[in-house]
Length: 72
Image (cartoon, rainbow, N blue to C red; front, top):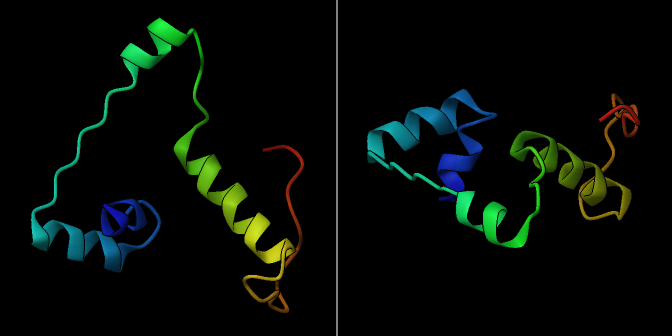
């Protein structure tokens, strides 16, 4: 599952995922309907998680780090 998710952002991980023949289909329509909630966009969530990891010192800040984009 982690390799499949990483494949959204990394060509190398995508290639590995395809070779492993991982196919994961997720449907949140029941949760949306029963709980009346809207989920965040997965790609935006991963980006926000990365910013959080950097800001909390879990991942190092590189020289190219520009900070969180407030428009996300």
